[in-house]
Length: 281
Image 1 (cartoon, one colour):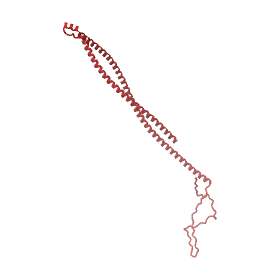
Image 2 (cartoon, helix red, strand yellow; image 1 turned 90 degrees about the vertical axis):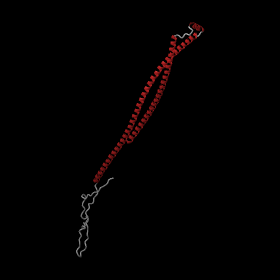
Image 3 (cartoon, one colour; image 1 turned 45 degrees about the horizontal axis):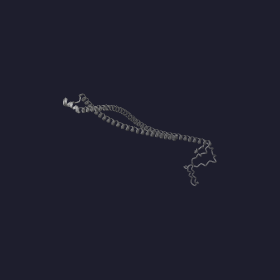
Image 4 (cartoon, rainbow, N blue to C red; image 1 turned 45 degrees about the vertical axis):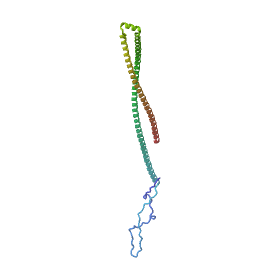
């Protein structure tokens, strides 16, 4: 909206003729006092002359309108600059907020990754222990197999020794029966009147076989006890391995679930960030 400002331009106006000019009034301080018997005079006050402004020319109006339009344009330009600066500050504030949120999210993700790496290190350590335990179990199984083979060999030797002892016992009983026959009794009665003892070689062999049989029985009992203890230890180790395998499986399942959750959260955060950037644009 244009505002017109009127200013006096008395210098440019033509002068009025004297006949049309108003009569000058005397000042208020000048009072004429009539003499004795004279007619009273009228007191007239003279006000200052005012410059009556005339109408502006079209050139002056155009110049005034141009100046006002320039002022309006400069004000619009200043307002646009301020609005652009405000938008820049708002976008910078939003970017700073998004950057801080992204930094906080990255920090949390870094902490989660470090926690998962520590869990993976513990899992690797557990796997190493499991591998060592498996190696130990394999060695123990090999030892048990060798002990079983040795035990079977000893059982064979023991069975042979038992068979030999039984054969010698039968021979001894046959000798005793032969000596108890009437003919032998008469012969022995006629010779020296007493029963002949066993041959010393057979007695020594029989005693040796008996001692060997007792020793092998004791050795077999000891080996049985040792095998029983080793079997119990192997069963306990296998139970521990099963529990460790179950624990490893549970941790792996939990890690997979956490990875899937982290991937989903990252995708959601990326979508939200993309939507915010589109809104800002």
